[in-house]
Length: 80
Image: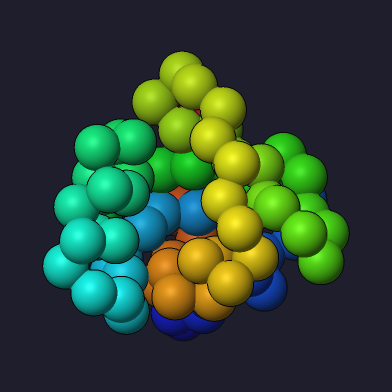
């Protein structure tokens, strides 16, 4: 089931399926390694930034940005 990154609980690993934002934002996220299909683990959630582990790095995303990112549960159980 698709949901928003902003709704994911701390400790969950999910896979990015898409971003509902402008081309500039999508390109910036891609530069940070956040491309469709990538697995990421949520390390910290709050009303402020959300911290995720992706491709061996930690990335802080604004809560508003996280509401544009569609994800699904990572069926493999692999950590990011």
